[in-house]
Structures are given as structure tokens and as C-alpha cells.
Length: 329
Ligand SMILES: Nc1ncnc2c1ncn2[C@@H]1O[C@H](COP(=O)(O)OP(=O)(O)O)[C@@H](O)[C@H]1O
Ligand SMILES: CC(=O)N[C@@H](CCC(=O)OP(=O)(O)O)C(=O)O
Picture 1 (tube, helix red, strand yellow):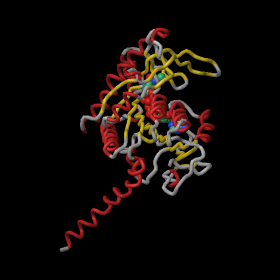
Picture 2: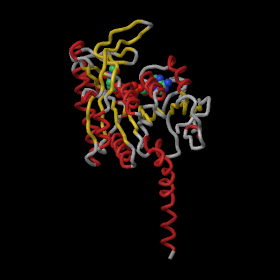
Picture 3: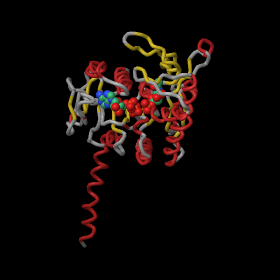
Picture 4: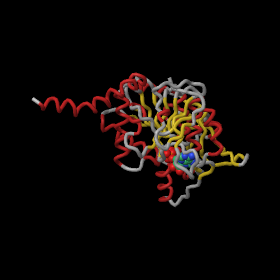
């Protein structure tokens, strides 16, 4: 007689986890979420497989996930094999014509293919594309600004236009678009039909805005935005657009395009931008479907926080940098 009772009790914690997800499922249902998977977060096969499970889970939970992937370390390794050096200026790769061929090959032919394969283990869901496909991303040449000077960094692009038609069609069809951050010049005659290397954080933010996404999630290889990097590992759990804008000049290396992208996103209609630790298995599910806020959340100015706000939980080691009470409703 005691057996059924014992079973009931052991099942309870699992049921609680599902029930905890209920308000978040309701809130995010039907919403578009753009997920940037950074090259540095793609550290091992188990994590990549867990990432794919999370994205497929989002899709089956009724969200509309779009993946934009990076691949900086993978490009650097391939350039090295070709005897080409990797040089970065203002956080962007100096991209010669020879390097551009390698960038395109690695992003579209290697990293994107691998992610599409992992997602499609779960069904015929993922479709890979680059910004070149169906005019998704048009760009013009980008010059890096260093000490007030415009510096030529080769075939690096700045997105000028996004045509979301193909991505929307895929989402409407229940697919998961997987996008490589390569763009083509808008005017083939003037610019010789160049393809450009676009930073993947910048591309993800621009796509999130163009799609009217609710959320931009950026997965990287740190816990979030550190308040005083590299001196301390206090993570800023949440901050407003204005607070982030003030911090931007102090940021370094890969965090610059990431946080600029988050700022651009929340200033142009995306409800929240989150930087998460891609080394934590299932970081996306934890962030989106549980009360356990992780990483850094950027909110638009002047929004109102409710009791469910994850950032306000003040996880150990996290620093609440929120001035006004904001929430992403
Ligand atoms: N304030 C900061 N907080 C966290 N990381 C920072 C900060 N400033 C610089 N970084 C660096 O930025 C890196 C993340 O950017 P990046 O290497 O481009 O990653 P990804 O491949 O995910 O785009 C971190 O590993 C860290 O070395
Ligand atoms: C212009 C520029 O820097 N492009 C990046 C594109 C890949 C990228 O952004 O990858 P992560 O997200 O892994 O850093 C590069 O060539 O490394």
C-alpha cells in the first residue's frame, strides 16, 4: 500500500519544475527569440548538443527561435592552417580578401553545418543560411574608429539593410533558421558585389531588431558582464540601456560588440537582451523558463519591474546595477 505514496512524493520536485515554467511558457509563447551562439561558447560536443536541445525545446514550447552563430576561434584556427595571421582592431578581425574566403568557408561551411546537423537530430527543423541568402543582410564597408581615426580593416561589413522575408517564412513554417554573419553589398555595381565579414554579435542584434524579436540572448564564455573586468568576477545581473551606455567606453575586446549589440537591440524595440554563460549546460532553458535568473540582463530605460523579475533575485556574486525599477513586460 505504501508504494504509490512513495512514488507520488518523488515525482513532486519534477512537477514543481514544470509548474515553475508555466508563467514563462505563457509569457514567451509565440515570441521570437534571437540566440547568438559565440564561437568561444562552442567548447565541447556535450555543450553543443545541450544547446541544440534547448533551441529545439524553445521551438516545441511555441517560441520562434532564430540562431545566429559566431566562430571567431574556429576562423583563427583555419587562418593559421593557411599560414594567415589573425589581427583584430577595435574588436573586429582585419579581413583581407584571402582571409574573407576562409571566414566564409568556416562560418557557412563548417560551424553553421555542424549546428544545423545537431538541431536536425531532433527532426527536420533547422535551415542554414548566410546574410547573402534572399538579401537577408546587406552591408557596406565598415571602417574601425581608433583614436578618432577611421582605419581600413578590409572586408568588414556594416549592415545597412535587413530583409527578413526568408527568415519569417521559415519561422512561419516551424523551422529554425541558423544564420552565418556574412553580408553582401547592397549595390553590386558600385561595390563590385563584395561579400563582407560581419561581427556575429552585431548581426544578431540587427536581426533581432528587424524581426521585432522579444528577446536577444547572447551565449558566450563568461558568466555575464563583469563590473570590473579583469579585476573582479562580480557579474552585473541587470542594467538599463542608459547605465550600459555609460559603461561602454570602459569595456574591452569581445564584450564591446556584444554590449553595443544589446544596447542597440533594447533601444530599438527588443524587450530584453541577455548575456549568458554558454559553458553552463542548458543555460537558455534556465534563463527563459525558470525563476533562476543567470547572466546579465539589459532592459530598456523606464520599464517597470515586477516581483517575477529574475535579475532582482540577487544571486551570489551578482551585482544589481539597476537604478530605476525596470521589467520586460
Ligand atoms: N567587462 C567584461 N565582462 C566580461 N567579459 C569581458 C569584459 N571585457 C572583456 N571581456 C572579454 O570578452 C570575452 C567575450 O567575447 P568574445 O571572446 O568575443 O566571445 P564570443 O566568441 O562568445 O563572441 C570574454 O571571454 C572576456 O575575455
Ligand atoms: C568582423 C569580425 O570580427 N567578424 C568575426 C565573425 C565571427 C564572430 O563574430 O565570431 P564570435 O562571435 O565567435 O566572436 C570574425 O571574423 O571573427
